Amino acid sequence: MTDQDLLALVRQSLAKVAPETATMEIAADAPLREEYDLDSMDFLNFIIGLHKATGVEIPEIDYPKLGTIAGAVAYLAERRGQT
Amino acid sequence: MSDFRMPSLGADMEAGTLIRWLKQPGDEVKRGDIVAEVDTDKGAIEIEVFEDGVIEELVVQPGEKVPVGRTLARIRTAGIVPAPAPPREAPQVTGSAAAGVPAGAPAPPAPSRAGAPPPTRVAASPAARRRATELGVDLRRITGTGPDGAITLADVEGAAAVAAAPAPAPDRQQAMRRAIAAAMAKSKREIPHAYVTTTIDMFRATAWLRAENQRRSVEDRLLPAAMLLKAVAGAVSDVPEVNGYWVEDRLQASPRVHIGTAIVLRGGGLISPALHDVDQRDLGAVMRGLSDLVARARSGALRGSELTDGTITVTNLGDQGVDGVLGIIYPPQVALVGFGRIVERPWIEEGRIEARPVLHASLSFDHRAVDGHRAGLFLAAVERRLQAPEAL
Image (tube, rainbow over all chains, first blue to last red; front, side, top):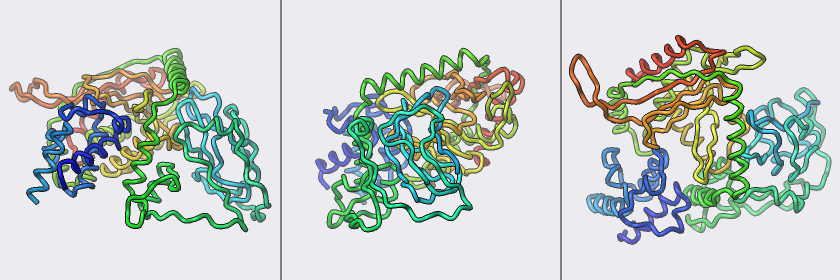
């Protein structure tokens, strides 16, 4: 899976919890929770979406690393590279 | 024979528009079955029957707006042998009816009658079918991405998210705003509110939750919100008078604990559906129930009973970064619990100052039904339960 694939997947997972983001330009380093008003449930569902799509286990302690689009792509790329 | 009437889905509701019937004359129904969808100021709501029987007649047609209490259908109650359903044309959805269907609502189902050609079965996984039913998504409108174009669970959830995506039309937003305003004004006008507050040490609760989530899979993880709901439900057993309704000038305490949960809608506004029997569920079940309730609130798939059964409400503004909230009681309930964020603050423990995660909790209570002393005991009971999270 390329970084572009991961980017599409992250955008897709975000759009599932914040549908209005599906058609928006999103800065890679924008803090997702603040910018798109994600509550705890939204963010957990975002993480669950990433886990289901990639199979990557994401421990709770790593959640802050997935707080931006760029962070989530980098995290998934790294974790997939390790497995 | 009994009348199935337009239910009141909240103190502020005066009328509703029938979107569609999910049952037809001759269909057998059981208590709790969803029989229709109704459009209200707070969105499309599924409504249930409260007795067993057979649908005898549909009195109101899709698109008609009728006041609360008006007969929608007649039901032959249980014990009567149902006659075969008479052949009848499927109700036609008129232009005005179609206009009454909110954006994103599923299309009326194709009539299913003997003699009619069977509808083409859509290829979808069982999980996708189940989820589509839960979310009110029409499988025929989804392009599957699974093997041979089969519809997957992710396809259904994606379609539901897209359906929910458009912000409510301005008139709907205004209607919801008016409904909220009416309920809040009524509450403040009629209920003598009083408040107690406390700050709770969340060190043990958050440490336990961290450890618990480490051993759980991503999909089964818990949020603090689930713990708070369980703590509230447990505390109700210590101070039962906070759980119930003020009607006919007296408190009617409820033996069951259905917690109304304030949920913010992404397009604006909020809704407080009830999570049923929270005291009877374990933490995992509370979390799953909460997750399901939030998803259905935001996709417009709540049931009428969930809007009327709440016996106490919890509002949790922790995600909004506020320290605390003093809420307005949702009538005819008599109490509302407010939680702020869990945040590190200086805390004195055995004479030492430490940084500890703390939580501001409040109880807004109807002083006709609850005394200040008992309200204080209730918050103390919530705090006590959060000091033993493993027992929640």
